[in-house]
Length: 638
Image (cartoon, rainbow, N blue to C red; front, side, top):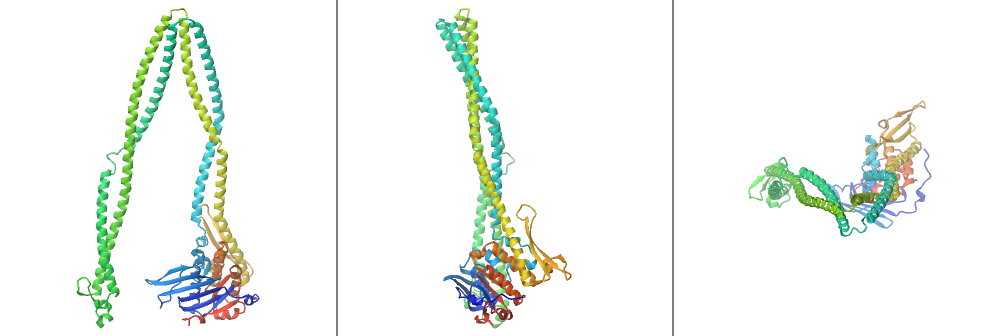
């Protein structure tokens, strides 16, 4: 394949400096990184990978290891005058970062899409044939998006229910409005009849005198008594219904003989468990220092005076004697180790017991809270039951008194009507009875009319909100579509980006036996595990025919190319380059110079800085095209 024209002459200087101290196999190394591609040249085991791991670590990727013969290490990266730092220490055999002022805090994108080393998870997944979906989608908080989708779906369902309810209300309004008009007309007819009856009474009574006035007063008092009776009857009916509800709820929450423990029983058990937990904690606190002190003694972390300097124990560490710090006697290390093991087992057993008791305390505390809430509810219900029963008794007594008053008034009215003594007595009695009935009917109609008018007003007010509810529903539906499409868009972008680049790479790197390698997005339906990415391979036979094949059949070189292109697709789709304009490429020894050149062209097109490790043979062929640095300049490198 023909190489691109040299790009080395285009480099005008470097704004990036890397300094590495005591990392991997490197004692000291300094590297100037130019815009574009910088090749790191060296034999195998010449610490190329160590430098690239250091660079990846200070960019925000995995923490590199401290040099085996050092206790600490450091990496410094200067970009356009700004320094980024990574200080490392060895603790308990592992490397930890004591200072981490790295280039990017987005560690997942750096590990997946920037640090394209041999241990890169995507490259490893391709080699192992594992699914790529979780790796490629890791920078997208799919769990949070799906949680928001569930919330929006529930909100949309609520709004749909509200709209359905509002539609039902709106459909009821015509009937209610018609009923309202009917009641208004009926009330007007009753009032007209009342006026006519009263006018006739006035005409017939004429000058009937005091008897007529008394009769009118008694009839008004009778009407008032009837109204008060209706009020008491309505109140008694409502209170009786409430008493039934309170009694039913009380029977469901009152403690029974089959209930699991009382508040007193639970409190007593909690007190016992708290005492037992304290005893276990005291025992653990007493035993732990013994284990720690004796462990230090066995590790040699005690003064020399406490050890035996005999030659034999040095040759056989198990037979070495030490002076016991508790009793002063000389004992073998093996005996102490055996005792430490027994004590450690005892401490673990006590801790397990304490954890079990802690869980039981939590459960019993919640149970006591439930019992207390239940007891409080029983107390409230009993008080309400007593109040309702008392009020019912009072109202029934008042109703009896009112009914007695009504019978008395009706008797008095009959007496007054007889005392009126004229021929109009029967007609007047009839008229007054009619007036009484009409007033009662007017009151009932007025009550029904008021109820209907309130219902109409309430429905009209709620129906008036339909437009705003519908607007909110459309907004929620739009947000729901956007979040559903957000994940799908990233998935499709990853697939299309990989497929386009993979085809270009196959053509550029001249993998003639492979016709096509493409990624398919497969979705089985809704759900967190419904989507996968499946790799397909299409090969070309010698006779020109094409056939489907599997990734397992590809060479390691071909699979490594796929891994690099998949990682680059993630780098582009997730806009990693905007935050970290670097690509760190390692483990490309299986490629010849022409194919390395093709890969570097691809990486250089999409990243501002590309640092790649190559063997000297390939570096010699590519030194005219790229800046090249030899690992021989690193201190501690063979």
